[in-house]
Image (cartoon, rainbow, N blue to C red):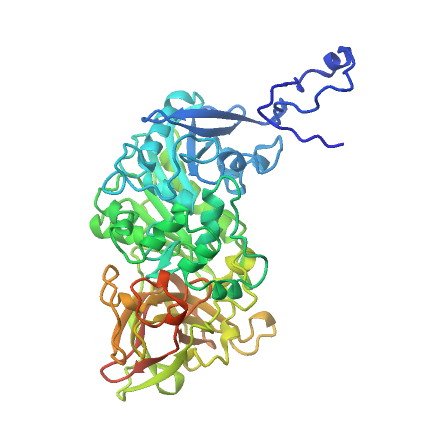
Amino acid sequence: MRVRLFAGLALSIALAAPLAAQDSAPPLDPMTNDKVASYDWVRPEADYVRREVMIPMRDGKKLFTVIVFRKGTSDGPMLLSRSPYNATGHTSRNRSQKIEEVLAVMDAPFVNDGYIRVYQDVRGLYKSEGDYVMTRPLRGPLNKTKVDHATDAYDTIDWLVKNVRESNGKVGIIGSSYLGFTALMALFDPHPALKAAVPQSPMVDGWMGDDWFHNGAFRTFGFDYDLGQTVEKGGGEVPKGTGDEYTAYLNGGSAGAFARKWGIDRLPAVRKPLEHPAYDSFWQEQAVDKLLARRKLTVPTLVMLGQWDQEDSYGAPAVYRAVKAAQPDAPIMLGIGPWRHSGANYEGSSLGPLKFEGDTALQFRLNWIKPFLDCRVKSNPAPCPPMPAAVTYATGANRWEIDGKWPAGSERPLYLASGGTLSWTAPAEAGSDDYISDPAKPVPFVPRPVKMDGDSWRQWLVQDQRFVDGRTDVLTYSTAVLTKPVHIKGAPRIDLRAATSGGDSDLVVKLIDVYPDENSANPVMAGYELGVGIEIFRGRYVHGFSTPAQLEPGKTYSFGWSLPNVNHVFLPGHKIMVQVQSSLFPLYDRNPQTWVPSIMEAKPQDYRKATQTIRWGGTEASAVYLPIAPD
């Protein structure tokens, strides 16, 4: 019979006692309580040391921290991650006596080279004390307390360098997604012992283009995250069942109505975005890129992401751009790999149907992340080489590239033209194409049935876009077959001249690499329509993200936004395609297409069909500006 072990009970049995002592003990009473208080699964033969400590913060709260290193380590640099996802779990991937099995795969090269790995529960979660604020703002207008992630990082590092006798007193900080956010926050008034930072796929601006909104359009998948992250009893996914989430969200109505239907509207983490649908001070004062640009960056930083990051595609390039604009000589570089969100920490030889030259994630970890840290946190290291502006993977050509500036391409417009074509020259003749957008039948972001989880979620940005072929509410424009490569390095920029018959509208632009129809060497990719960049824009923000306004029916506006940063080569024999539509559902909430003060609270009668007009040529030429590299 397998016995489940529970902590915190009164009875404690010394299971670690030698067998001889057990043999000499008197027989147990049949009614002896079989529950025991604890069991130390790290056995004497383990090849590592694992310590659990409570580190005091300046306000008296203590944060739970786990320190792991290989036995015999001395004078070791410390690598810190501050997490909302359970420090105990991060340090017990497997209940093994081998350090490579206990820690994440990405940690092995570090602990096998003398690093001391440190994971900490952020304030208010798991075993750490204090209140949990999901994106705790920096001390200032939104946070009148004395503590934030910056002070907690400072106090943690201060304790570590004074109390971990096996260390050399130098610290690097690393982490992805939320952990990338906390890594960035450590750069504000940093501790002198913090020598390097590697924020990966960090959430930086939750409204502009990371987790909660993209250019004003609300991302509904956050509801599941909020309920799972902030509720102690009963937390998890919204209990909407296992069916098609397209139907669940369509039947749920607006974001606010959906939240009320499932009783999650009382959660502070849900209420905050519902109460702040526009880019007001609530979001602006939390934008880490803008906050970092106001200060001098002193800690060398490698900020990175995946080219097909389905959660936080905005943050890393935004930080790089903002810091470099304010401080041209700032010690910061950008890394982009051919990965999904947080993909740098997993196996990276493929993404969906795409195959790369070897394990690109391992390559980047060994060739860039580790050397970047080694020369800054090790004792007596070799001098650090000069930092390039960017290290990126050229998808299509499948090679790593180093650049002295980013973006590394120069803009060239690719114009929408008549007959569903794309032209490198502006069409002299003006024209337009129309489609009817119906909120009752929004365009799905992936083939139905929709489930915003698993591989369907992780790989949706490389989904074959042929699944929308035949829809009358999707416009398609394409070049002729390319006779030479087109290499883009940067963020493609959208200039869409459009009008609507309604009072509001969303616009989605997809930049697509169309593969040749025949490919016997790799049949899966025959005719494949690969999304190189996909992004949405909520029309009411055409005059400014903090000043939503009703659109005048029939009036042509210039809608401008950017697609995510990429390094991609459109190969000869391929075609470049641009698609335009007005929904990506249910990832983004539906625009009712009538004017309402807050789309979060749109009523069923507000959702109406609208005719969308996309103009091309003449004085109102729509175009995608591609950052073309001089290969």
